[in-house]
Length: 344
Image (tube, rainbow, N blue to C red; front, side, top):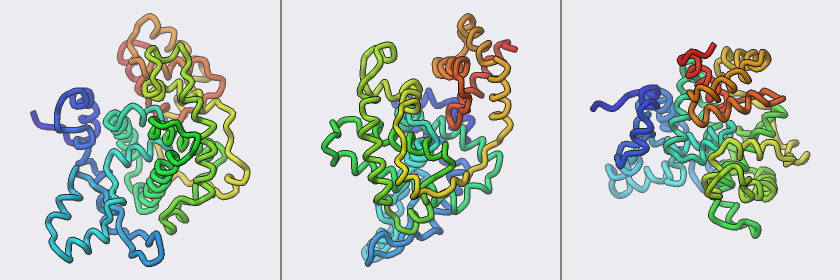
């Protein structure tokens, strides 16, 4: 059977590949999409500044096809291999699942990231496909530099949390992801973002960012550890963090960013311009009570998936309708599925 080439076909087959003992992963299915080819091209042409005195400029090597970094290195011998590795350090390799993790985290989908790399990249693929179809030129050098900035911040937090005396162990990835997602959500609410240009030039996470991240992570930790009885039957943190209810709980917490940290940020610039038609329609549906009607209809019809039913249930009762990213995408999927099954 010929493998699908693009995101859309790949997404339809994701469950089959994710559940099978198969060497073909979801990320491999997406390798041919123009988005990844664009990232590959930019990464090969863009030298990053040296991170420390005495170091040389180097590339952030985007690995579009699995294992390509090792393959390219093996083609070289002796001095040529050492020179190539100096220009392309292993610590600066970016995989497709890395890219999906970093962007989805900062765009408000920590529960999706916690569902696993392959499920996350499937969801990420849908969002990128829509954005690419809207404006492929927005995936440019500033976009790539922002992506590298998010990689630098995420990896720095990954490295810093285990050294904290309050960290209990075992939940590093979820704690990092939820910490950064909450910080990003709070920043976006104020129209702010990290200074990605400065992060690119320094090639390291700012001290102010790291201090704030550790403060937020410490406050957020109990929200991941103390699982509501009605949410997860087996009481495992690894299952709880996959639930959108976990993300809602974190967002609704009273954890705020410090005034000092906010002063280090810059005005937000949305590098990728998403299509605005659906967000406006979704808001109008909420104002007219359509999400409440869909929620009641689905309780009888049982058409929506568990995740879709959960997000529609939220839209039916929320007093503030401001969905973004994956939540907005899930609402669109739910609405389309319901319409296909006769809901009007």
